[in-house]
View 1 (cartoon, rainbow, N blue to C red):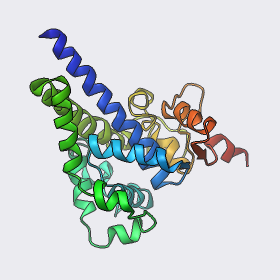
View 2 (view 1 turned 90 degrees about the vertical axis):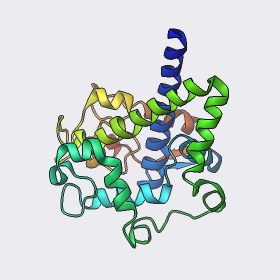
View 3 (view 1 turned 45 degrees about the vertical axis):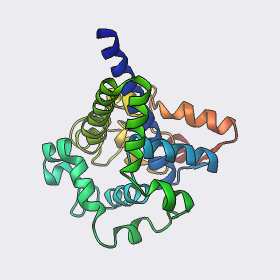
Length: 245
């Protein structure tokens, strides 16, 4: 029983990291900020992973995040803890996101360049189907009870702890390298694919690398470098390159 429980925890951790790296590499760096160009096959793999483990719609996520950058911690920011209150965003970030995603005209204004392709129309647009496929597959692999437990732990961790901490905690506590209202939290960066280096990101939104100093580590950057070496990705200028130019 105890072994099965820890195995369910391990599966949940793996699912969460799949969601984290798919979010930061594809949704954030590639689709939103164009700091990275991925091979179409790699992009579809990331999109499929996101569909199964999160149900996130690319156009909605991109639109909400771009608006966040346009109005960071000012009137119009979809999820600023400085405006809405820390706990409102830290605990309820997903609800701020869902409300903003339904704003009329949001997608046309902030995500007009995101292609509504065959994959989106026939598969990824069905946001409830993806997680359902994922949960059923998980239950078939490790058993119904443990599968549901792993899915629940993953969902709570990704939605209510990690994702919300980027929009909540990283705009409330931490240190700064650059002059903006976001903050860096090194420990959070280690478990969010580098997203915890949020001040760096807001300082140079188009940098595909989020780390800046020797004491910072962006876990997604080695993966991006590997994809680049394999000819499967092409990064834009990093923070360091931008500062040198």
